[in-house]
Length: 485
Ligand SMILES: *[C@@H]1O[C@H](CO)[C@@H](O)[C@H](O)[C@H]1NC(C)=O
Ligand SMILES: *[C@@H]1O[C@H](CO)[C@@H](O)[C@H](O)[C@H]1NC(C)=O
Ligand SMILES: *[C@@H]1O[C@H](CO)[C@@H](O)[C@H](O)[C@H]1NC(C)=O
Ligand SMILES: *[C@@H]1O[C@H](CO)[C@@H](O)[C@H](O)[C@H]1NC(C)=O
Image 1 (spheres, rainbow, N blue to C red):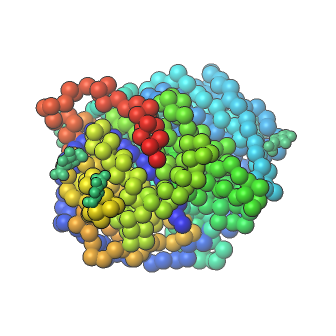
Image 2 (cartoon, rainbow, N blue to C red):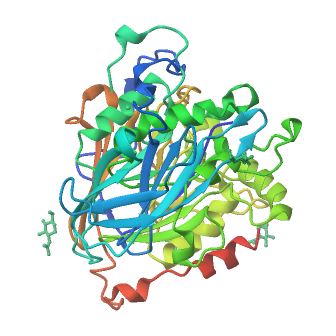
């Protein structure tokens, strides 16, 4: 089973103008598939920073609802050490300090390091901040930039990654592999590294990560060491720009056979989300606003209480995986949850729905499947201008390799698909325009394989009041919806 997550970007865009793409295209490009094995642990990509107890696996994420806070997280291996972030607007001049918390966990025979989470808040918009963590000779310094103020015309660029690829390589194809990696279903293979490196060149300011991080669960006893190596691998990006986290099925790590009966244990210890700011009761469902985007993170695998978990696991893995129904590997698995959410997507004018999990790339037209009904068997989506475009980006590069057998012929609702690895960039230009590009890794960053211009119809619709507040989404509604499952 592949990892999966769902992330929704509500740009209030309705109709989709496809530029230069003929209807329903299956790219003939098939990636040369070098084995998706994990990068060896001793690789320089996983290097441990120098100095006693030096902070490692540094990552930041948005820390509030509106983008004026970040959560800085890191791991110290030997002892807890201070859980403090020193920061300021000038390099090496850290005139402010924030205090965080420390946690640690065990997983079977693995003992984690000391995991720090520190909320740095009260930040100014559109500002570069420098920060320092750790002490003495082992201190490390990084920086990040805050987003512009919430404004429908704020331009902002997101990278969308399904990352599974990173860690694995046991075989030795190193010389044939481009030195780079990052997005959803990432993993830690060389493909993952390549995705990450390509992403770094795109000018993306924040990553929307679609779930399935380390794939540590593929190791015997869910080897926590692979969580650590993954954290070090992606630090080159995660320490400098926020990654908006979502979890996938590889984060569940429910192992009663090892005495590990709580779900998402490593993930929840290591990756924090600002869920309380959107009044969510679970770190796995939350919403944030950033510049002109309203981002809603949904994990189809997250339990609402233990009772629901079994149900959720069953329904969501077997009955739902949203975008998966575009791909033969998971054809129609996703229906029940998708159709429940769909009404809501339309109502709130969600423009784009991103999902990971299937290991390929696919973009739909604006399609609706509200008539879907298991009994009637009426299961084919139809074009609907009010519906979102669904994009599968489960192509970060994990160990499981590519899902290259697409359902054939290409369904009417599928606009473009390709069995290859890459990442996406979503550039929000202003309230009316957004440009979305998908780049396959092999072409470098200047050759988008799929480009779409979105027109935001929320702002052009005369029947809508043009106030952002009107469209403000409350997670309570979502939870009501979820509770139906
Ligand atoms: C956390 O670390 C402390 C100090 O090393 C240790 O005593 C404790 O057992 C650890 N807790 C877990 C859950 O591993
Ligand atoms: C589904 O289809 C069946 C048979 O056409 C019909 O009896 C049933 O009411 C439909 N259910 C819904 C929820 O529309
Ligand atoms: C499009 O979806 C909306 C909301 O579900 C629905 O009311 C409308 O009838 C649909 N239009 C078509 C052409 O199916
Ligand atoms: C929005 O951005 C698009 C694309 O960059 C541009 O063509 C358009 O004129 C802009 N609209 C406004 C109101 O600035």
